[in-house]
Image (cartoon, rainbow, N blue to C red):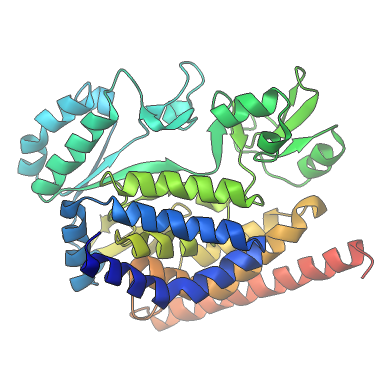
Length: 393
C-alpha cells in the first residue's frame, strides 16, 4: 500500500477496532485469533487492486448509493446463460442493453457432481467448477462488469461445507482439530434431544438434522443434506477462515458492493457486524443484496427482505431465539442472540453505511420493529435463566 492508503486503513481500523474487538471477544475471548483476523484484513487491503480501491472511494463518497431504486438485477446460472464464465462475459453487451446493472451469479464454486445441492455444497472456496472456467476467468468477468457499470453478486455459502471439503475429509479421518470445525457427537443422545425441537429443512428428501458416519463412529450435524456438514462457529478458527474466504472474493470484485450471504438465518446475524466492519476496513464497503419492489428500495440480507431500512434482521433474531432450544448450544448462542438483539442498528449502520439504522422508517413499522426486539429480549432472558438453572447457578 502507498503511505496514503496505509493511513486510510489505519484510520478505518482506529474507528472500528474497539467495537470489533469487543464483539469478537464476547464471542470467543481469544486475543491471538482476533489479532490474526486484523492482520489478515490488513493483508487483503494491501493486495486490493487499484480499480477496486477507486470503486471503494466512489462508494464512500456516495453513502446513500444503495437507497436509490436505479438498480435492475438479473440472476443467472452461468452454465445455462453463457455456458462458461467467458461465455457470460461475451454477452455483457446484451445484458447492458437490457438495462441490467446488477448481476447475481448463482453458486459456481467447486462442488461434487451428484451431491452439489445446486452448487451450495462447496468443496473448495477458492476453486471454480472446472466446466465453468477458472478464477482468472472469474476475475476477468467481474472486471468487465465493473467497466460497464454492472455490479456483481455471488452467493457466499457460510453455513456449511461439502463432505468433500478438506476440513470434512480430515474430520472423517479422525483429526480432532477438524472435527471441532463441525458439530461431531459420539452417540445419538444430544442429536435425539435436538431433533425434538429443531425444524427440518427438507423433511421429505433429507429428514433429520444429523448424519451417522460409520467410518469414524460419530454423528455430524447436517441441517440441509447429509453431504452438507454444518460449520461450528463456536470455533474462532472457523469464523476467521471463512472471513478470509469472504475477503478473497471481495478482492476479486465480488462482494465489493453486493454480497449475498446464504443461509445467514441458520447461523447468527452478528456475523454481519464483523463482516461489515472487516470489509469496510479493507475498503470494499459491504452493501447488501438489492432489488426493486414497486417504487421502493428493498434490501435482502440472507434472512429476508426489508423496504428502505425496515429491519428484517430482527425477525431472523426472533426466529433464532425461538428455534435454538437445545441446552448444548446455549452458551455461545445466548451471547449471539443477545448481541443480535442489541446490535441490529449497529449492523445496519456499519454494513449499509447508514447514519441512522431506523431513519426513514414509517412510524407503524418502527413500532412493530421495536415490539419484535422486545420479544427477542424476553425470549433471550428466558433462555439465559434456563441455562443458569441447568448449570446450577
